[in-house]
Length: 363
Image (cartoon, rainbow, N blue to C red; front, side, top):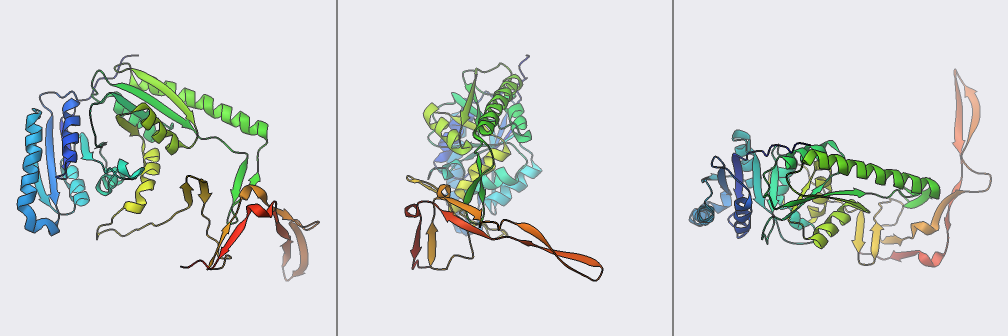
């Protein structure tokens, strides 16, 4: 296959936040193979609250200019007043870039992948966004995560034409989520069987085969400019992606919108909202600790001061003898027939020592 022609990044928008992260961002930009027409716009946005500190903002912009000059990059600077997310959207809309480059937060388990401004640009913007995290040393390994979706295919096409350093290699990762033979029943949080063991094994084999086919398609779409390594994993997608990044020392993570949104979901606890924000979300449905994973289910039947601790593998919903759901006709009334569905079910608890209730929980 003929390798795709590498696209030229003629317009790069650098979101300058005035922090030390700009050192890593500029080093990353300098490592990309640019041509003489590549122009970088370093955009600094200062909020109304920083109006009295404009001299500090100018000094921080001057530091970024010095960093760009030291790497012999062609650039211009812009300083705007407003809120960073809003002004970045506005400027990029009026001056469409080939790429937006930003620094990422560096705290916590997964919230380090994005900050609040970067998350807004990724979710709501129409432009490719590249997040650079500290510390940055060199661009040697690139991880492309694919799930076969339309967003993943667009991402693959973009990376295939992206001007990576010739020495950089690309790992293409597909994660197979294993099919389980049970499904949850809400709100009780129970697990009821729907597949036999043979059916479960057959579906998982088919999913693995499908994953291999998607990886081969990705290889063809990327071309042969950079070395490519195909990787398939089985498990939770986010856990496997993060584990692979850590174990293989990946320098760059590339994924489509579906997977990106799942990663972003881990930062809700640290998000801040601007005055223009109209929608908020505060929800925990799963708690994971060193002792395992626990689903959190809301039920109006549990007393306000109580918490149920249940092992769903040892619980079942079963009908009383002869009392499974059945239809019973009632006497007709007027010009229509009537009936009722009657049934009586109970909760079967196996090994009551595996279940618990805590009372007197304070609000």
